[in-house]
Length: 178
Length: 178
Image (tube, rainbow over all chains, first blue to last red; front, side, top):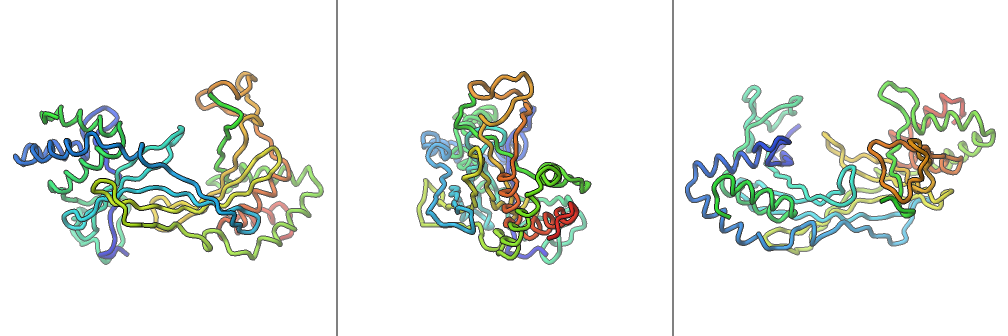
């Protein structure tokens, strides 16, 4: 049962495999066309974050052994760093999480947007999400304002060099002079 | 380039979706037919582990905040417990790792077998693995002796109630009276 304490987790991306803008990329495009102040705020955020050491360089996954055992097994604790940006409008928050790469050596930084379930608009039958279970493959509508967009911008600029370069290229493509 | 410090990571299972014995299940079947002492050793391990609290009940993933910030982002450390059985023949080792369930709430315990690359036998062209890169989708032959099999047995009996029940059922199916 979904309660008002539950969140939707959205591993948000910005381009599809063909290079087309999707999700955050699409949001940036639409928001820049509708909000004349946004361009200036985006430039300010870019100036603030473009030279900061990225998360994947500054932090690492660590393993800690302290000689404890459980039966014949040695206990190891794996410490994964997470950077959280909270205090966003409507209690949205963003996590940047370091994960081992799949099918490769090294780490990748992933950006997750968390949206309170009570702020999502169900599409299927208009019934509120809270107080029921989600339907299989249910889709909902969520709203991103400029506060969320600037938060996601900070997150991708901070996450890794790859994300930073991609986002700066998208901004230039959308005629933001960065 | 693969070195003699590298390991093959095998997330090992025991049944396919149709219930047929595969991987560890198949190993148990074959080893029981070839090693007359194994049945007794298996029974001994089962008696030792069948009533121990399982890993997923005894341990949990924790999050630790200590009020540190990186730029505007709060730093959170996620602590994931891992149980490791090492000291196995040929430097094989086994990890039981707790991971969040995909598309569901809660945790699942997964068993990984680690095999030194220098102990694996390449199939493609007989060229040693060490000193070259792996080919795409390359398959190798690995050897499991009774020490590895008993280690995997301990791991699945300890990992979770579900794994424990599955493994006990497989043993009964293979005519081991447990």
